[in-house]
Amino acid sequence: MLPNSEHLYRIFSHFVSDAQRQRPDHPDWPGAYAWQQQTHDGMIVRGWAQKTALSTATVVLLHPFTCHCMASWIVELTAHLRDTFQLAPIAVDLRFHGRSDQCLPTFGTAEMWDVQATLDWAESEGFPQPFVLWGESLGGMAASRAALDDPRIHAVFLKSPPGYPVHILADLFAFVQASGYEALNEVYSCNIIDDGDIREHVAHPLHRPAICYVMGEHDHLDITRTRAVYAHWYGGQYGLSRVGFF
Image (cartoon, rainbow, N blue to C red; front, side, top):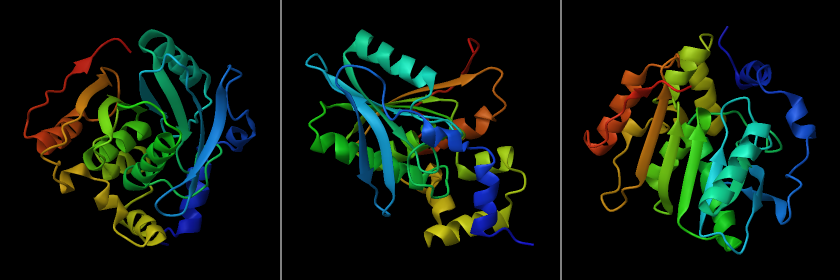
């Protein structure tokens, strides 16, 4: 039987806890507050932010699959980035996670829309530019796809991102074969899986965001595929290598 959207929803829901939607919506910090914004496709994404008089730029934190923007390590990381580099932190729940709308994840383009909605909100609230994205795994895929399209993004830090949507779906979800991709495409009424593959796009010649990419030596993902993605994007200008500290 081919998987339909309801079946995929049940499968993905097995990995994302309902408890994410019950936790506080922002840290108990002076000036921190919750926010929400509508995306390109009508979803509502939610998160939290903090801006101080010392903020000179903005960092957007993008969590991995099954995580959320109030995870303790994300809160600790935002505090470090804020205090060390005077960055205004914005953390967002990508779709299907945390308090954001529960539309199916696509590991690329739909999450790019979440990022762009976050930047729209940041601009409307007067958060300082430049904008920097920090993303891990799913968040890294969202960051890399958004950086290709959105000239507001000055730099991205990518931690262990799979190369492209089919890469992660095939590696982590063996049950999601071609029929599963078709079901996701049907949900979004477009070929959203292929659109999330940055090898299918051409980088804007005038937009060259700085990229820092990190892959742990024990990470199970195939770094050669991810390297090929960025070599295609920037003509081999960016070299990628494994590091051994996590």
